[in-house]
Length: 304
Image (tube, rainbow, N blue to C red; front, side, top):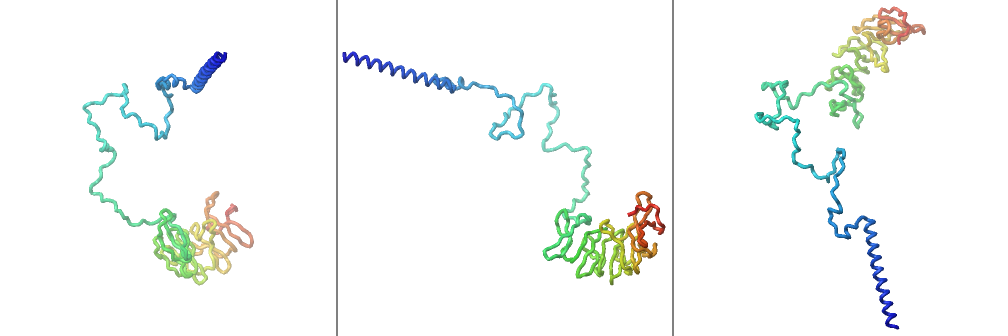
């Protein structure tokens, strides 16, 4: 009885073990199915597991992946519509470009360009003021930054009509764009050139010099009209307002008085946009009006 019972128990245990083993295998199969790895269980080949799939056509990209393989060096098939090359035509030499028929042949007599040409005259806009650490002024090329005129001036103004006002030790004069002193530094004050004439002060009297340094109008006037806001430095439309004995009048570029000293204040002459007449605003006995170059009052009273 005891032996039979033991055999029965062992048989049941073996059956249970077999069932458990089958269950474990089924469980493994289910897991493999879930992850798509069932072919591994049956030792299938990689070709069967990962069949070749043609990649979809993609648009070309500007920056290809550096890890992508290089393109096939094999030449593509010729286009049937392309004409066949003529066997008699010589192959072009890649190192010898075809000459342009419009390009003239170089003249062997032409000299080679000078590697170090002489410095050209600077345009006004090319020279700009700058100041060093000692407070002195000079000029440099605005494009290259190269110093053209060394810093040695106590006062300096921008170039106007090719010349610039400079000052050393309280004496004013003019230099050209190469730094040459063309009008001696001897005046108490100077203003920039305007229409070929520049105002200068000597012994507290004002006169005018031309670009050669000639004192066309000797220093004898108490003041002259200028308006830096309007970029007027003196002469305008060939005349300039000057003050003598507390009255204002106008002189021309030869120093001739063309409008007498009779006004309390004057402006500058300019061409009126409406009438086309050269006019200037003046004031007399607290009344402002416009005059022409003949000192006749203008009806159009809208001058500046």
